Image (cartoon, rainbow, N blue to C red):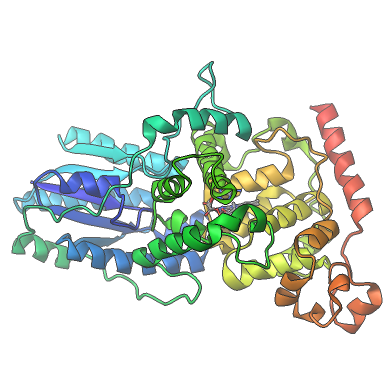
Length: 482
Ligand code: FAD
């Protein structure tokens, strides 16, 4: 009998509950993964992250090989076909006298992913094949942090306090790399793997994003050792490398959130809050990540991009030809607001954007340009190497005031004052908006029309005061009519 492990966004051998469990059963273990590029495109995800996934699979294949576990790659297209392909694999193994006793996988929480798993599970039950599912995407599984009335939290701060209270119950050291399964893979099984496995597309080194699991562990270690202590003070300043840049690795599952949180918690004297300010603040951000995942499960309509606050569905988002031009300018980083443009160009160049800038840029699109947050969400999703439905949707809806947030809609960042505050020397602007690099630092935040002309930089596409008032009026009217 064989233990099958289906790998998805959990591209690692450390702290991988599905893999660990399978390896403990005293049976040969076979790993499978389904490349679902069509589904990826339907979900609006981009090529750069796809390549990182492929790169990660190369590393995973090697790690599994060292554990004497072959990785079978199936070219499935979409989720529906992936279930058919896994079923066909199981049938093929059974017909060669190598029946699968259990399928093991780590859960994914998005609607289509859950449908896929239910489909497979039903079939397995009919065939008397065990299905072992594990939570690995959150430290505390969704549904376990609820109000006294057993309802999901809709605002972060009370969620965090309740999360803290539950932490002891779920706090466990990350799982080690499993011991190689006792029973080795037979030559017959090796032959089937060779016959059925598609070739893994070639790895292409990305100079910015290392997809080797061990390199990611080193990145975590380096951050916690040297930079985390300053995190509370530096995390909002995009010119400095104040944050961990681990989001791409978390989103691909190259490292587990438990690994990050447990290590930070230990280094913080086994405290979640208090202790060292930098570490406590970093732990807080990891809990934000949990919050958005819990929301996605409690409110599955978020997966379909509905507003969390239904009353905001009526906001009259602009759709005119002028709005379309504004949207294009925003996408390309040509709005005439240097901090917004630098942010957008960072995204296009690197596949990543600093969190402070994500807030500034998202708020600019939704409030200053009054363009539907769903368009910005889709654009980020397409370009981010850490694109993740829960956090992206959460961040966009938070910025657009349509989301799970206690603050009122009239929180509208002024991009210029944000720029002066968080990039005071104009260093980040100079890095990404080369046209303005020769201007004195002070002028980089808001070049005047002569400076724009001389440096071939666009003048602001909308005036701040006017835009702010337009957004306030639009939201006020929508709320009055709701
Ligand atoms: P660090 O500051 O080192 O934080 C550590 C980890 O905590 C991150 O890797 C991330 O997993 C998590 N985290 C940090 N801040 C947040 C946050 N505000 N919300 C949720 N989790 C957080 N994050 C994504 O992973 N994928 C997305 O698609 C995404 N889209 C966003 C869109 C908008 C409009 C906004 C405002 C935020 C978005 N975020 C998203 C959250 C955040 O910006 C990134 O997680 C963060 O910038 C990643 O950088 P880092 O790894 O250096 O984070």
